[in-house]
Length: 573
Image (cartoon, rainbow, N blue to C red; front, side, top):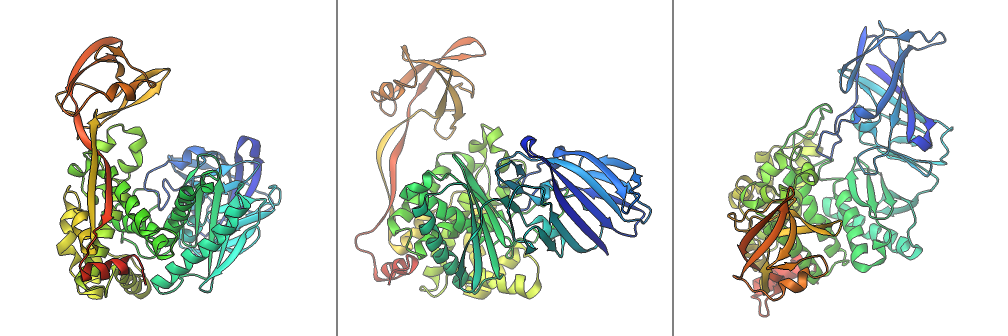
C-alpha cells in the first residue's frame, strides 16, 4: 500500500505555469510514474505529457539526495528509489481554455487532474492528500474532493482524477435540492437577474432529476461555470461538473435555455456515465483508449434527457421541444453519414473520428454524432415504451433498473446484452428486438413512426434549391469548405479548397451570392468558374432541391390513446 502527497505551488502564473510536487511513500525498489493520456468523458488521446517540464526527483528528508529519472515513454518516467520515500517536482504549462485541460492565469486557475498529476503505475494506493500553496493568490479552492479550503484528500486514484479544482477569488452560491447540498461557482460576470433565475431554475432541474432517478447518489454537488465570450462546453465528474458559457447569450431567452440544457446534461451524468456506465468505462486505463460501442447510452440517452427535463420542469414548452428535435434530426439528414456509420461504430471510433471532426472536412459525409442520433434513439425508445405499456412505463424505468441492479447491486458497469435484459426486466418490453438494427446498421431512425404514437406528424414546406457545397470567405474570396455528397452529384468535380469565382459568367462574392441564386429553380443547369491550385476551371452542374422548412406538429384530431400518451409525455395534467 502506498501513500501519495501532492502539493501545487506557484511557478510563473503570467507564463501559465504551476509547479507540482509529489511525495511517494512506498517500499518498492523502483517506481514508474505516468501522466494520463486522456480524460474520462472526453474520448480522445490528448498527450497531456507534452506540457510537463523540468521533472526531477529527490529522496525525502533533510538531505534530499537527487535521484536519477529515466523517461521510458512519452508519458512515463522511472525513478529508482531503492525502497526510500521520494519526492518528484515538475512544472506544468496550462493554457488550454477548455473543460478538459489545465488553464492557469492570474484571474483564476482551472486544475484538471488527468493533465496535472503523475501517478505510480501498478501501485495499490491507500491514501492521497493534496495541498494548494498559500503562495497562489486565490482566496477560494473549489473542488468535489474531501476536505476544506486548500487541503483536500481522496481515497482512490480514480477519485483524484475525477475531481477538477478551481482556484478563484469568487465564493460559491449554495442551494439545496431534495436534501443534497449544491454549490455553483460563477467564474466571470453574469447579470444579477440571470444569476437569480439560474439558481432558482437549477434547483428545480436538479430536484426533478433526483426524484426521477430515485434519490441523490451523493450528499454534495459542485457546478463550476466559467463565463466568457464565445465559450461553450461541459465535462461531467463524479460529484461535480465544469461548464463554460457565453454570458451575453444567457441574456436572451433561447440562450438562457441553452445554458440550462448544458447544465442539465452534465448533471444527468451524475447517474448516467458516472454510475450507470458501459462496462468499459471503469476501472480506467489512463494510458490508452477505453473502447466501447455504448456511448449512445452514455451520451445519447443523456442528450435526450437534458432537454426533456426542461420539459418536465416547464422551462421548455411542447412546441419548442419539437422544434429542437427537428433541428437535431435535420443535422443528421443534411449529411450522408447515416448511410456510412452505425451508432455503435460512432461510439467505438469516437477516439479517432468524432473528436477529430474539426480536422476532417469530410467528417459530415462519413460519420454521425452518437450524441445527436443517440438522443433521437432514446426519444424513440421512450415513446415506444409509453405506447407498448399504455403509459405505465418509460425509459426512466429502464435507467432506474440499470442503476439499482448494476451500480448499487453489483458496483460495476454493464454489457449491451445486460442493458437490454434490464430493460425487459423493468418494462416487459424487448427494446433490442425493436431498436437493434438502428444500433448495428447505418440506417436512419424513423422517428416519425414513434411520434405518430403521440399524435405528432412531420410537415415539410418551402422547397428551394441547394448547391450541395458550403463556402467560407477568405480575404474577400469564396472558398469551398464543405461538400455535401448527399446533395451534390458525384460526377461534379468540386473539392474543399476550391475558390468559387463566378456563376454563369457573373463574378460572385458574399454580398451577391444569395441574390444570384434566387433566380434559379430545382433542376436548372449552372456553370461555375473555380480556381484550384492556381488553375482556372469550369464546372457544370444541375441544381438539387430540399425543403427549406420542416416542422413537427400536433395532429388536429388525435385518437384517445394518442392524446393520453401525448399528455403523459409532455407532463400535462
